[in-house]
Length: 187
Image (cartoon, rainbow, N blue to C red; front, side, top):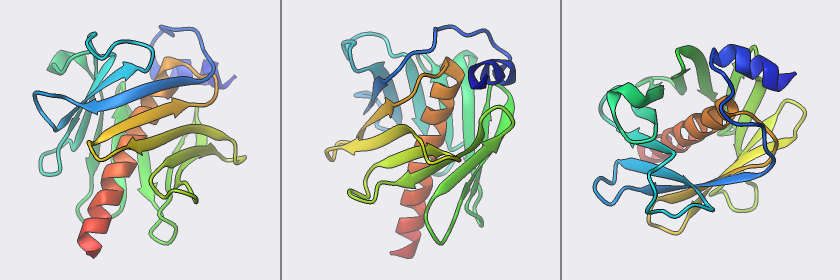
């Protein structure tokens, strides 16, 4: 049912059958450190990226998600941070999905009709990894930093369609960037 609703919400055909656990490497581009290139962990990093993510602290949108290489025609999602609040306006395939940070817990929640309530929460053990959970507490995905090079890994822990994978990617990176911004402001 979630898959069907996600499909309808995205307004696009499922391009890939739902799968179980999938892992993606998000690595800074050698040409531009503000661009993350995304590959399946089982594919060579020399291959063309599945996705590219452009990061910007100063220009809007702060994040743009591209299918494949960076090109205005390949943009599928954006995230724009608010200057005086802890909310982020996200858009994926033209659908608006707000991401809100709870200032007390540091958790990020997102809500939408097809996805229900989901939350990114920092892992209690490492405080470096974000774990996405549904409203029942089930772990859906994990976004972790690897080393100090800016590399990250996104682990998809449940079967889901491409739209949900892209939403996890966009919202997870947005949550990481907002957390970094808040921590820098507090320092």
